[in-house]
Length: 80
Image (tube, rainbow, N blue to C red; front, side):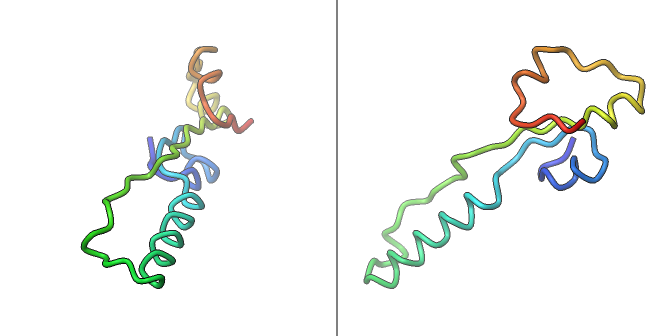
């Protein structure tokens, strides 16, 4: 189990973590607020709002594991 989808794309079986594009967007919003005059100390703390769950079925099959349908249906992406 990994925290970035790139690990699942390159052979890891499962990843569950932040969407890097969403985090970059949030950083841009924060930077924009600071550039418009907001005080950084007064800005709220923000957590990642979008998480991705990716399953690599090729790796699961290579390990001899059967992934339940409910788990694959709940994933954001299944890599065949």
